[in-house]
Every structure is written in C-alpha cells, then in structure tokens.
Image (spheres, rainbow, N blue to C red):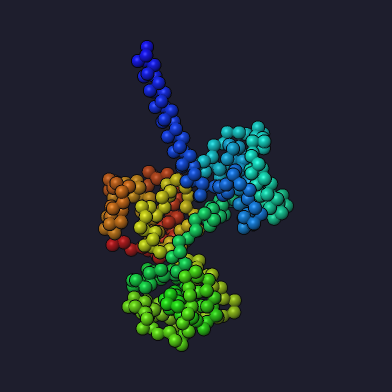
Length: 369
C-alpha cells in the first residue's frame, strides 16, 4: 500500500511540475507576444491617456476599444470584428454579446473603454461604421507596426553602405530623381558637410546622425574614400540620365523632403544577419508598411524563406549559401517536386505580397546567381 501511495504521489508531483512548466511557458509566450499582437497591450494593467491615443484613426479606436472586450472572450455580432479577432492567436470567443457583462472589466479596462469611446465619438458622430463593403485591416496592422516596430537606425539612410561598397543598378532601380539627388549628397553629409540648399539642409537636419560642421567652400573631396567617390559619380550619372542632364531641381516651391524616405531601404546587412527576416511569416499576414522599404534582394530572400521553412531545396547557389548555415533549415524537397499547396493562408499571401513588391521595385525580380 505504501509503495502504491508513493507511486501515486510521484505521478501527482510530476503532473504538478509539468503543469507549472506549461503554465510558465504560456505566460512567457503571452508576454513576448504582447508587443505586436495587441493594439493596446497594457489596456488591462494601466490607464491610457488621451495623448497616447490621439494618433489613432476612427477604425483603430473602434478596434482598440473592442479589443478590451475580446480579451475577455466576448463574441461579436459584427462580421468585421469577428473576422479580425478570429485572426488573433490570443483570442478565444466564448461569451455571446447578450451574455457579456461589463462588470468583468477591471478599473483600468473600464476607464480605457471610456477614454477610447470619447475620442472615437468626438471624431465622428456615431463612431466608426462597422461592416462597410470592402473593409480592410491594413490600418490596424500599420498602426501596430508603426508603434511597436520602430525602424533600425540605419533605415534613416538612403544608401547605408555607400561608404563601404560600390552601388549597382539594382540599388537604384526604383528610386526617384529626388532620392538619387539626396542619396548622392548623403555621402557628403556623412562627412559633416553643410549645404547652401535649404531643401538639403532641411532634409539632413531631420536625421539623427547628421552634424553639419564644414562649410561647402571648405569641404575637400579628398576626404572621400574610393567607394564614396565612385558612388557619387555613379549617382550623378543616374541623376542626369533621369532628367535630360538637368539633375534634380532643388529648392522648388512646395518641396517635400519626406518623399525621399518613403521607399528608402533598410540596411540589408542588418536584416540578413538574423536567423529569420520574418520569424512569423507563417502565422500572420505581413503588411505593406513592413515590406515597402525592403530592397529587391531582401524581398527575394524573404519570399524564399517561406519556401525554405517548408524544406524546399534551391538551385540558386546564392540561396543555398544563405539558407544552408541556418540552424533551422532542412532542405529535403527538390524544386520540381515542391508544391505551394503546402502553404497555409498566411504563407501563400505573404509570398505573393513579397514577390509583388520585388517585381515592382525591379522588373524581372532580383537576379540570383
């Protein structure tokens, strides 16, 4: 009998330990997920201020308010809200709207619902109109990415590596005349040159890395290294080629310095040094704002990363060199035997999105070796 009790005690102890580990693991996962899975991650633990939600659109406000209810398992009669929350990995809807009671909300949640509602209804009488034809979640995705996924510092450069390598036609294929001009002068700006042009002064003054200390008349081009000198010539030729030798006309009335940042690229070397470009491309939809500043090369790699995670082998030596060192990669399906039918809905949509951007930026796509 004692032996049996000991065995039972041992089993119960193991179950208790196992449950504790499981629970701790789930808490950890939930904590890590908060940064990008919620519009307002802390709506259940602190008061949000009017200033913090002042940049939210009507749709974001409506969704943020209902997110508080959704976290308690409320179901929604709105097809739009139902579809959105069912896409969230943390959502478990099990309480009908008619059975849901606001008394379940804590003091932070109740206050935040009121603050968000006040803001929403102040922007439009009646608030956001749900279930309109063609509704989209793009605004929500963009808001979350903007708030919780700040760009790396090097993203503030048009050409982050213009001082360490020669630029090529793929680097500039999709850039505007304005961006080419700014990119050329960026090489000078990194060495502290000031500018007579107010437009260039305004643009570079907006960059945290810029410190203009040398007057144009005192600047010596001998300070430039071989890469920088060659890249200036390369960009100047491109600039003239796009404008019948006139170049970009600086300081025109109504110039907009921020247009130069809309398609600047993140630094490839930073993005490609991690295990994944998009660690969760198989569990959520990527958004336009996440991929629009990626270079054709990174777009191509990110697209093929989706295939690689499914075990596809590659004919391109460039992709072999990139994926083979990855600890997670196990290529076992030949390209001719691989079928995209294996993709889930996220992977299929993301592969298409990445390819569309790749081919838009560079007709024919990035050329692999």
